[in-house]
Length: 221
Length: 226
Image (cartoon, rainbow over all chains, first blue to last red; front, top):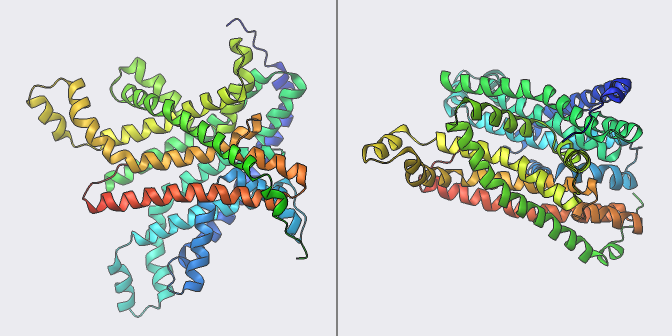
């Protein structure tokens, strides 16, 4: 392979890439915060004995876990605006799809985390005269959250990877900016290599850190 | 909401969607066919290779696992052909990307499965005079593979979801067909909803199957690897 690599165009258009990087972070941050915030109530609803709470939550989680994310994003971009009361741009469509997806997956993490706490902890809280809500917020969640940290970190990593899908609906995140630059500068080889390396540099360190942390948790038991 | 739903327009093109689904399954199936054996090879290299093999293989696995699939797909479709001087059509690029991408994930499943087997099994095999290769083939892998089945099927489902990306390089999968029909009928709401429903039916059925298998294996006392 005697291809002459030429990275000058990428240096020239670094401003565009930087904008893309910021947009990637913006989208990931918004979806992560909202996704984790709404994941807890949904996870709790799946615990509820009342079918009025349990069923909608279960249906929601199953639909979003069992359809491809890209389908969700495209649905919110192309289909939802037709019945939506407000305007939808690429960012809102991507944010809606990715947030709801994160809600569904994180609700399962909350559920599993809470289930992992021994029943005796609930009973002990009750014996002290705590209400159900107090037991949850003062006894169960503080212990459960610690166990959920690696799972949430993995979710966050997965989410950053998924933001690249927003390029399909032309939201100007990293991948889309790379696509734009490669069409202007005719440098798909360099551009797509560099963008893959950027993602690797962004995601590999936290991914390794989570793996380490998980191992240390296992050792501590 | 004063929107008039009209599914009839879309249902006329239903067979087109099904053809798309067939292509989705084709890419998924081929990626599995190549990705699984490759995953086993990668896992064995990472577990038992010397440093010269272990490190590069580990790097490749981590690279494939931590970069977005769409970046990989674009690289194989837009960059590789120029670099290698070969012609690659969307179908080949898709199969190549998803075989490699899933092999990295399968490698980790294999590794977890093999590592989950108690050391006593290795020792027992050694005690009856088996070489390491033979112990792996006859004692360790048969047990490990059994434990890996659920993790493995979940990965396959994940793979099917990821293949929706092939539409971005114009391979006519289900999502790509839906987009086409939406553009020709101006019925995006109905088309995308039906497409999502088709995906849901297929994927949810698979997920339920996996869950059933898991509970059955748990009941028969077989622990599963993750």
